[in-house]
Amino acid sequence: MAGLVAQRYGAAIFELAKEKDAVVELETEIIAVSESFLDLDLEEFLGHPKIPMAEKIKVLETSLSGKVSHDLLGLLVLVVKKGRYYHMNEIFEEVLDLIDGYRGRVKAYIASADQLTVDQKSKIVHQLAAEAHKTVIPIYEIDPSLIGGLVMRIGDRIVDNSIKGHMHSMSRQMLATKID
Image (tube, rainbow, N blue to C red; front, side, top):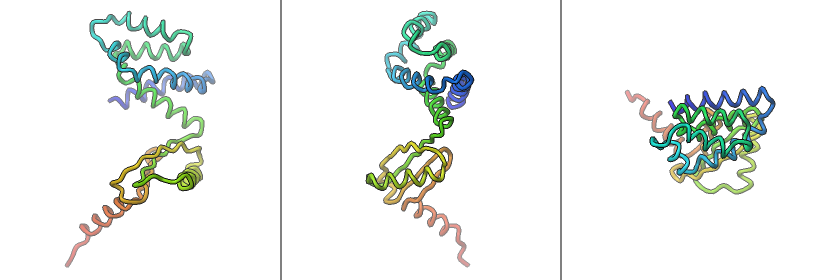
């Protein structure tokens, strides 16, 4: 459910910014505002049942008015009115992903067993960029359970070239083989 909420609200504000040719401004505002929503006190304030909705909205409007676009402020107010403020970070992530796609960028999640060298990282990013035909934003992770090799994910495409993945594949093949 949360993914669907984030997709709907994120797509709505993104399309509005695209129509107004304000995608770059929206990206800047989303990054700035998302830092505020990482604050647990703000989440607690917005979720507090004894604080009237009008007061929550007034705090949002007074603190953000003039600092963000009218459209983004309207989205934030709507999300709070609907009681979906706890999806705010997911909505921001969705918008940033849509903006990345619009601007020809894609996030690549790269997991390795050990720390990669600068040269290895550069080669991986260049190869992924050539295949994706987009600018690659690499996000590196160390996963010792891989034993060796890499697991890369761009969007819904996963390339598992790890020793752990190869061993799992061989295990499935061996189990599927019938011995007569």
